[in-house]
Length: 339
Ligand code: GAL
Image 1 (cartoon, rainbow, N blue to C red):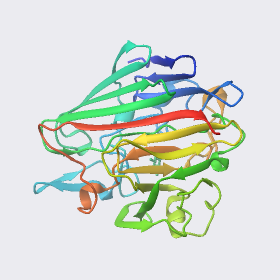
Image 2 (image 1 turned 180 degrees about the vertical axis):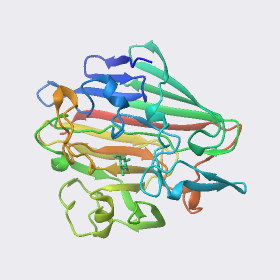
Image 3 (image 1 turned 90 degrees about the vertical axis):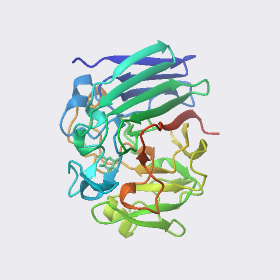
Image 4 (image 1 turned 90 degrees about the horizontal axis):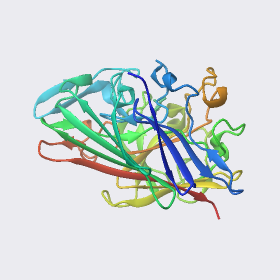
C-alpha cells in the first residue's frame, strides 16, 4: 500500500499533516512570536521512510500497549499471555506489528477532522481479543491538535494508547536542541524504573529531585545530574503521575521555547505522561525533513498514557478492557505564544 498524506488546518494558524501509515503526525505548523509558520514536529523527508526498521516511532499512534511490559508477560483471568519481546528483555509499544506500523483506514469529513480506524486480530503481538480501534485527529479553534482514541474488544484484553510525536518548539531541525525549553508538569510523583526501564511498582516523589517540574524549569537544567533514575533512562524517559483526578480532561503540562516563543499546553484525561527527551536519537541518519539528522535530544515526546506495566501492578490504575466496554481517551496539544 502507498502511504498518503492528509492535511488539517484551521484559520491559517495551525496546519497538521498526517499519514495513513501508523496514523503518524508528519508535521505541525504553528506561528512563532513573529507570526512565521514553524514546523515543530520531527519527521522524515520521504513518507516511505516511516516504514524503515530503526524508525524511533516518529509521530506514531502507539498500541496496543504504549510503554513497557516486563518480560512481555501478564495474566488475565488465570490465562497467561506472552507478548513479543522487542526491547531488551521487555515488550515495548505493541511489538513490531504495533499500530505505528499499520496502514489505517482514513476518512476526512472536513478540513479540521481526520478519522482513522484499524483492526487488530485476536493474538496479534500476543494480545487477546479482536480489537477495533478508532482515532480522531482534529484541529481546534484554539490552535490545538486534539486526539480522541476509542476501542472495543470481543475478549477481555489490555490497552494503553498514545501518540509518539517528537516536538522541538525551536523548530524541527533547529541548531538548538530541546534542553532550552521551559517545562512545567503538574505531577508530584513519577513511576520509578529499574535498569531495564521497567516500572518497579513504586511511585517516587519529585521533591528535591531532577524530576521536579512543578514550577517552570529548563528541561536541561538537571538532566545531567547524578541521579540513578536519570542514568536508567539515559535522561528523562519516565512516566509522570498527574496530581489531577484520573478521567478529568485538564491541563497538565506547559512548555515553551524562549527562542521562537512557541508554547505547547497538554490537556488529557489520562493518569500519566511519559516525558522522553530523545535520548536514543543519534543524528546518524540524515533522512529527516530537509535532510536533517536529528541529534541526541533534538526532540521530546509527551506521551499521555496509563502507567507502564500496569497489568503487573495492582496498585496502578487498571488498563483492562472488558467485552461490552469502550476504551476512550482524549489528549489535546494546544499551541500558542508564551506571554
Ligand atoms: C519511548 C520510550 C523510550 C524509547 C522511545 C523510542 O516511548 O519511553 O524508552 O524506547 O520510545 O525510541
